Image 1 (cartoon, rainbow, N blue to C red):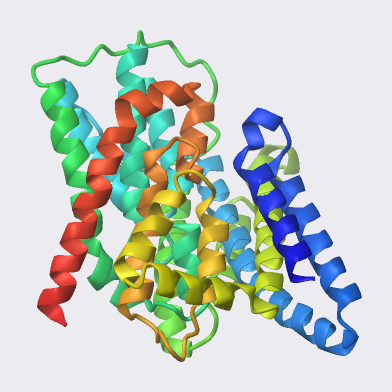
Image 2: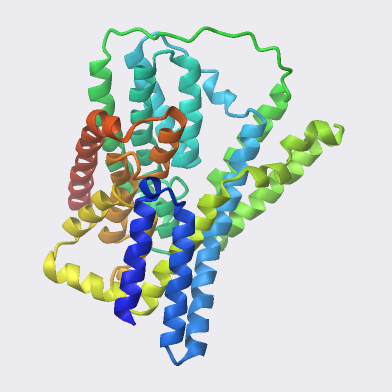
Amino acid sequence: MITSLIIIFVIAYAAIALEHPININKSASALLGAGLLWTVYAIATNDHHLVGDQLSESLASTAQIIFFLIGAMTIVEVIDAHNGFEVITSRIKTTKLSSLMWLVGFVTFFLSAILDNLTSTIVMISLLKKLLDKREDRLLFAGIVVIAANAGGAWSPIGDVTTTMLWIGGQITATAVIKGVFLASVANLLVPLAIASYQLKGQKITAPLKQENNSINQTTSFERNTMFFMGLGVLIMVPAFKTLTHLPPFMGILFGLGLLWLTGDLIHRNKEDQEKQHLTLAHALMRIDMSSIVFFIGILLAVATLEHTHILNALAAWLDQSIGRQDLIVTIIGIASAIVDNVPLVAASMGMYDLSQYPADSFLWEFMTYCAGTGGSILIIGSAAGVAAMGLEKIEFIWYVKKISWLALISYFAGIAVYILQYNLTH
């Protein structure tokens, strides 16, 4: 049985990693893998009550992550429907490419921490299309946006799916991960920004020709500002809600979603149904990326079988015996996340190491938060932010390897050096 489960998981994993060459959606591969793994496990195990209890346990932990993601993605869609992100984009004004590079980098970094790396990448690349006319400039900026978004998401409990998984799973706490990973993430941001802005020194921005927009603005300034600041406020208050009530984060995000829904209905209560339909949360729920949600369900349930059959524990023991050093093991996991998706890597790691042996906020979990969050920047397919940038700007894989990968690799190890130095000084 163990051999069969490993073979099925490896094939499903390979299909996820090769999503674009084989032209099969990774969500389909994840669901098929999860279905086959649990089927083989159930048939090979005589104790079907045990399997049912384990599946229920895995489903409960998976549902917490899924409900959180659905709530967060819906809030972002509502803000976008109200043109709320113009509150940020309308304030970015400069004539030098190097200055714009620093500005875009820092805005992306902190926006990613508040929202998430995928959303901030989409917002910033959409903004760059309005600011830069030259395609080569936009491509370079898009590469820096990917690095900045992943760096910003790594130190925030709501900034990256993997960080959220570790937070909800109890491996890290919000306050500790911010204090522990922030400086490493800043180093990960500053190194590529310094190099790229130096390359652009003296160059001026070539702005696209402005086109008259005859469309009627569908939201007022009051509506934009209200939904933007309230939506961001809900997302920011989730860690505080968890600390205060000790309830899971998904409860806080759903509570906030209800408040935002109520606010939206009150603001638009005097409008005709056709006029306000695209501004409602019901419409936003239809716009969220359900394919990604389904992928997370599939891969988390697939990894759960490896955890319940103790395959991950055996892998952890083998890594400890073969390599021995936690810092090297986690560094390798981070680099591997550039090749394959970091979600299954982190999910597997959560099952490999027991919380009783490695308690919350220990070196292993904090360092993994940084490495898994930023290692994906090394290749364009290694993170959700990279895949989004690839689609929005039609970035070629080879171009990214030549122009951006070396920057991301240097910044990755710069952050590692900062984290290990900080850890040694503070522990």
